Image (cartoon, rainbow, N blue to C red; front, top):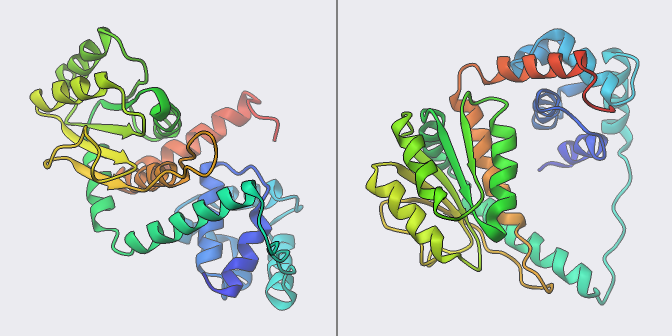
Length: 280
């Protein structure tokens, strides 16, 4: 990321933005050098959103409108917003955990230099109606997070985050309803029943997209589309920033593959505002 992009990205930190607003922020960061000179209409076209969405984005950041935001963008690129504090000479155990995750994320960024596989998996998931999302025990949080956001753009997402004898039934029901693929998050320690669940999915002909911590996990098979990022063991319980970020990357690829994703997000934002769902 360039210095200019980093400065603009810092302006958006700490703000709760809707998916539509995040897309606008991404465009500004990506086009940092020219961002202060883009009109609201140009920015809206570049982000694939409506012009009123740009105005709402500016208001969400605390400005009274887009012109005020654009002035702030110019100031940020002119003077910067300071630099982060220096690292402690001897990081404590909590800092070490963060630094370990940062190192793993840098390796993941390098591995994602070619987005072809992610984009292919995104198209596969977008075309599956319904889309079952599986994650048990330690991986349940990643599955829930993906399913929560995917449901805003995909018409039929089915979360499978509980084991038991009914798990195979739910996979069979998804296949009977037309599912073509299954997304699975697999993190240590791997539940035994995950092997059986994935076996059912493969027997039914579902393509398995697997997000895991290692290419050597015991639940994977050669035909799976496998994406890996290690978990960190620096703390008493594993942290899984890499696998979570991989899930979000797949979610982005899913959005890009759905032609009506942006329209669905816009409708959700409008309905949420009408119902006063969120505090901000």
